[in-house]
Image 1 (spheres, rainbow, N blue to C red):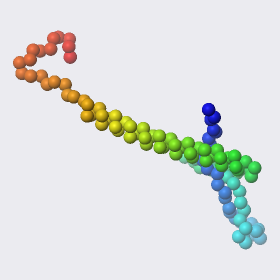
Image 2 (tube, rainbow, N blue to C red):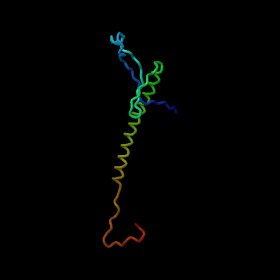
Image 3 (cartoon, rainbow, N blue to C red):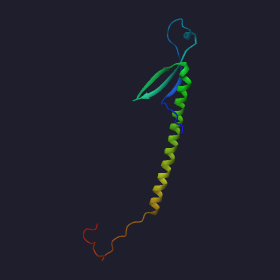
Amino acid sequence: MEHKELMRGGVYRLRRKCGKPGCRCTRGQLHESWVHLVREGGVQRTRVLPKEEVARWRALADQYRRFRLARRELKRQYDKILLLVDQLEGARAVLPPTRQKGDADAPSGVV
């Protein structure tokens, strides 16, 4: 069985201005780079990717996303099964007999 690697986060193309006067980005030709974004401990981390690695990193992030979607669906199905099992238990459960007046007391040591 093949085990595919996974990588949390996503790969995105950023387009931005550098702010230098006279740069091409001030005329609308924005600087472009590919980054990997991931949240670690409540903080978003950004890592610039080399162009030759973008396809690999994107595939790893896509595989993680598909894994998480499949996990979510599995949990949803599992929750449905547990609900049905609980309903089955409720439908089949019987109450213990009630004690009638005049019944002998239970022998000592028996609860």
